[in-house]
Amino acid sequence: MIDFPNSEYERYKQIFKGYRYPLAFVDLDRFDENIAYVAATQEKTGKTIRVASKSIRCLKLIKRVFEKGKEAYRGILAFTMEEAGFLLDNGLEDIIVAYPSVQPSDMDIFVEKTKHGATLSLAVDSLEHLETLSRAGKKAGIVLNACLDIDMSYRPLGNAAHIGVRRSPVRSLEQAVHLANASQKLAGVRINSVMGYEAQIASVNDDYPGQLIKNAVLRFVKNLSVKELTHRRQKIVNALESAGLDLKVVNGGGSGSLVSTGMDRSVTEVTAGSAFFAPGLFRYFNEVKFKPAAFFGLQVTRIPGKGIITCQGGGYVASGEVNVNRLPCPVMPKGLKYLSMEGAGEVQTPLTISRHAPEMNLYDPVFFQHAKAGELCERFNMLYLVQNQKVINETPTYRGNGKAFL
Image (cartoon, rainbow, N blue to C red; front, side, top):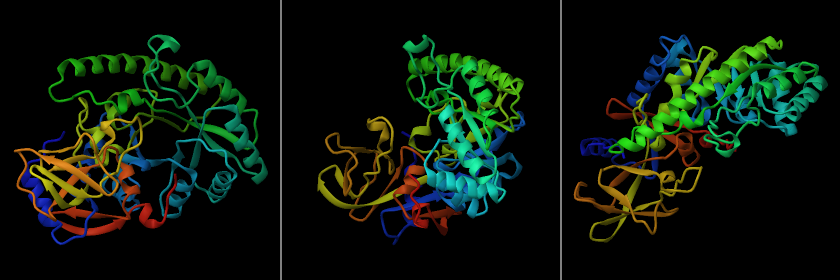
């Protein structure tokens, strides 16, 4: 757990004195530090950074990354075609939709935005995906851009072990070239970019406090994976270009792999998203260090017994495998823990108080970090923006804009 001094708790407590809870906020001083830090990871590589919008889900803050980061940042990695359309309508551009879709409504958006000159691509990993795009493109008399998604997971024992996420079935050079050749026989579609997400590096913490052996093992496996996937990605990219593809973008990585992915000469850009909020699951990386910037607050509404407080709401559990790491983390004041039999509840969340915590009274706030980044915004209509010890503004999340893309 990140150890926030109680002085930080008192600071935020005073900032939000009299505000209605639950509330969510972003500390812009920390957010801007993360923007600068992420940009600095690529100063020597010459790679630009594509912003993963799913990890922010707030139009104003997505735009802030580009405003503050300037030429270091270019393009967005979106999570649905509807979201891409929303972002394009609001002045953002150069978008890759990282997750395939074949439904007609998404093809309609894809066609409409492409017709109006948008730089827009959709991830594909099968002939069926390409054929769907081909039919839509031919019908509209245009060419739709496809981004070939390559599996970057680590399989040290072949198919007997899979370390990483289950995304694309395209893993080998031969599979990638087969789809490249097939795409060139289809009208209305072209593969103009490649992406590959190394989740086993980008989203796995390897600098846990007091866990030297575990950290050493994780780093060892990560280093092996980096060597394997870098070699494989370079061979695939070279083969695709030799097969006749004109690749405008080779995208790789995520927030936790900015350093290693940036060193891959075949990659033209890296991706960052969770780095800007630095949520609970992005605390302990060896190669990169981010400043926790996004929080939510709950009010204490009950004191059911000695050493226990109960907050209103709080059941904002993150997606992924079901375990305690998916629970929000009570970070301020320090010394608060969940009750093992209750956890984070939909309408109330009880917490035990250790000797390190200050005295807690009714209506005092407790500040949490969500386990993941952008999912926090699915729970709140707006975010308060904190800077220079005060709330300077508030801004809607996607939800506050009336949008729920998944």
